[in-house]
Length: 466
Image (tube, rainbow, N blue to C red; front, side, top):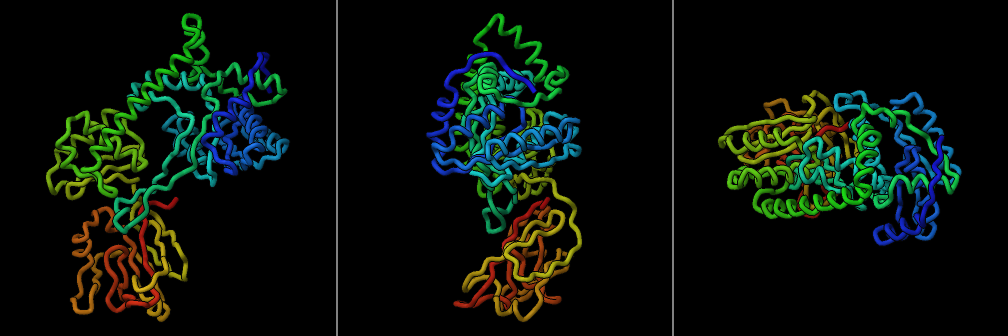
């Protein structure tokens, strides 16, 4: 445990002022609690402030299991929250699959994912002005663009996408909106947090890895920034101002991309013809915007330029595919799609027993069943037979209309513009050996709900279910 010996100002009042205009009364607020001094101070501040605004506080501690002290840190957080009467959730994560990213990056990604999964209106994080300065310098040293060098904002809504190239066209869902991120300590220096902790007799844990200068952030913090402060004592403030300038520039680029997107992006796909009409810089800006819309990680400048080159050089029938960081950029019929890498199709058989939603194995996605009237599959017909969900095998056919002949599923999928990588993953609904429904494409004539009849509309959301 550790303490600091500097004085502090009216920090609680400043944090209350920062949050009161953006966090409504009665909101649920989740605190990211590591047990370090920053998050301990934030917890103490919000515990004081929340009764004034009827905020419902909870805390989340992400147990990475990296340090030999990880269990002790989780126990400390549990004890601390119990003292304040704040519910705590401890979530265990495994960085092993992401170790190639580096320990810091892997832990950060898993921590953010754990926070975003929580059911809360707001998430409060303890980033402060020193973090802002360190992050800007690290990003510049990595060659980041204006977005990477942008300031961490006080408030940010983060969209979590469950990508489906067919979403927005009756096939899937759009983005899931995660809680709003709050950083109420961004205008506070680390020294002031230490002073506050000392004045209020707070205890916290020290992560021994924070002293390891082999980590880039620690090297800056312990070796570079003390020297910088000797010559530029106001560097925290001036670097924060530079970050805000970068953020403004990034916002302008987004506005330009949004204008280009009007003609280029429809649903979940990007028209390659529009990319070809733009300059390279503007094309990369639009492509970067499209990737961000889909929740995909932004590749480095070399990979992004290669994506643009392949898309613009592709012929009408070409289907280039660029993979990076577990994602794929694909092209079909002169349109680009971005999606997580899929697991191979597998064989399965699932019986529908009235569920509202069924998660299928591998990358076969999720089927939802919505009760309606006069549309979809006849509920009465379904009650007379056993409805099974099975993958496509390649020789299926269906009769989409009473006066129309049977059509091969292969031709129907082509006519509906279903991209090739989706066709093998598409789940089909059978009664016995009869194909009853191809979600988003066709319902067999004999099973279609008539006007005024109870029906079931089946929708498919593609993608992996982890």
